[in-house]
Image (cartoon, rainbow, N blue to C red; front, side, top):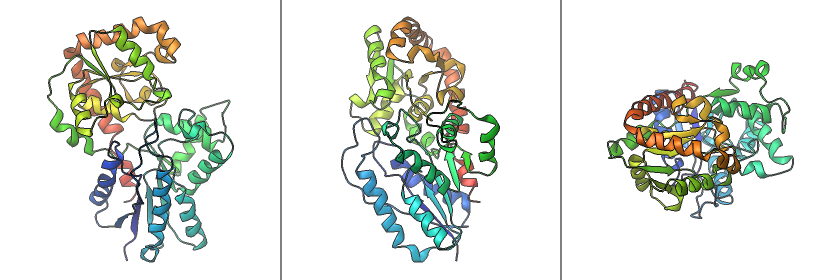
Length: 364
């Protein structure tokens, strides 16, 4: 009997990439494993409640989804083998602890894979706002329960290592270069691009759209995204169109059309462990304008990064608004020249951060 890869997907929401992941990840695995495994996806019960404001899921519904995933799997327990694999597309899922419980007490040989997005270890995340010991201890338990923990960027690995593996909350000494290489050696941590290979094909129909002097803010409206800076820029540069995407209640199609028309996608984020929307913009020829910090530091060419201190806070923006405005004017007025670098940038992002070959290879 062939072993099975049991996929525990993050809940598929129409406004998020999680909808595409729900169908895409099983297809990608099937294409790579060559019938070595059966593949079974365990969906949960999904309520139709609105997403919690400023978040990308509903805080109650996500627990309905995850709890019912566990029940759904246990009803299929008779189909398991002792060498099965389990892929959690959101590692912050308490179900991993219960499956680890079964694995160890039944003396099985299951392998657990988890993709980390965010958590209490990130002070800007919703979970990071929870005080007390329990989320810190829960994250360390989940990390040690997974055989392989996956991250999309070095920035995210280092933040996780500092605040979870080293248990320094916060640490006096953030990056332990002499120690943290060890977690790569035993594959406890694997840095891989995210499984978003579908994006190039998805966005292909929107290419070659005529550009206009449009600047987009594609992020959630949340404090760490600093939308107030973007709104202030719109006031200072009235000759250009500034659009906050979440103000518009856009469908995916509407959103992609706007991206295809935009000359700039703007970020002043204080939290970003990958940044999908700036990549989407680059695929459609929009200049990604990002601060030289967070995951952006390792992902983007110097052409597209501005000094981090310009948007470290709204007060810092006020001190540097002249420089930031001039940067935007330069991008808009010289778009035709800069566009060639956007193509190079998007190809690099596709190769290094938005395909999950290392994840798929780990099942071979």
